[in-house]
Image (cartoon, rainbow, N blue to C red; front, side, top):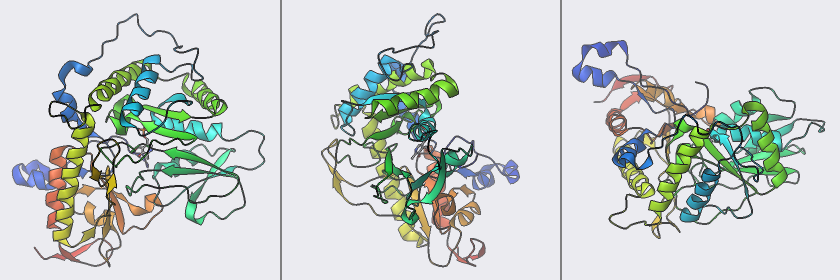
Length: 402
Ligand SMILES: Cc1ncc(COP(=O)(O)O)c(C=O)c1O
């Protein structure tokens, strides 16, 4: 499924028919996509609180919000997005227009359209610092637009030409907080803040960049609803993004918007009570589960001595009030010296990941989703701890030491 982080079910190898331990050993664990299934257990526990019913006569119209530059944005979604950012303190919403999209993937395309012009003579360069989110190149070049083109790693961009820089913070795949790297006249920044939530990283300030993209896929784990939103300072840019959606899909599903509105409001109301014992706080749940998984991963990696994972600085989180480190949605794993293909090595152990090359980086790295179900994570750790071998350098094992 190309470079996206979309859903793909687990596959079993033919040998799995044997049953028992063999089946377990042969089950392919798919940690290639950032599919947020680890959150299912939280939402199950909440029962009917987020159940959302829509009657046959409701939401028939194309239109939602004549006062907003984004005329198809449901007012309840607008309210709950503002409540959520207000409760967490990760982004300013006053003075911003909100544009809703079918995932932030559609908003990325809308942004590229909105920031370019049919009058320009040359295509605008789109860059992002490597390792960059693997879908950026694919999204930018999919329809070979005459308005913009993918120009690769922002570190290498040395043309004296207009550009759009996509700044992902925290970064997918590496989890680090990042800023712009080109810093030249004629550049426009788009901040992709899909993971700027307290379960993934300390919230150190309420951001107010010109264009900020968020998504329910990573915020609450409702990737299937396909709802993303952009906070946009310039009303004309917001209107042009809306135009893109108007022409491509005449708006965004109201069922999805209303469902996400409900869920965000439940999360926002509960997350105001961080740390209180009775609080079923979604962000607290996400943070403690990811912290536990990262601790287990670090111990395993240390023992196996085959891989390294990045270290993150301790920072004060304005939301939790704690000094804490990041627990990213992905582990950006590097194989030890001499192993050239980390993805291949892990694939040989039935673990599907995404190799470094897709992120404009080294194949010695692989990105592993930390957002899978508990049983997938456990199997991943078991297999990782068993990888000890002499290796011929290309990810093929010569012999096991175990
Ligand atoms: C950095 C980043 N931006 C955007 C997206 C797209 O998210 P969606 O289209 O599900 O909203 C993803 C998905 O994995 C992502 O990791």
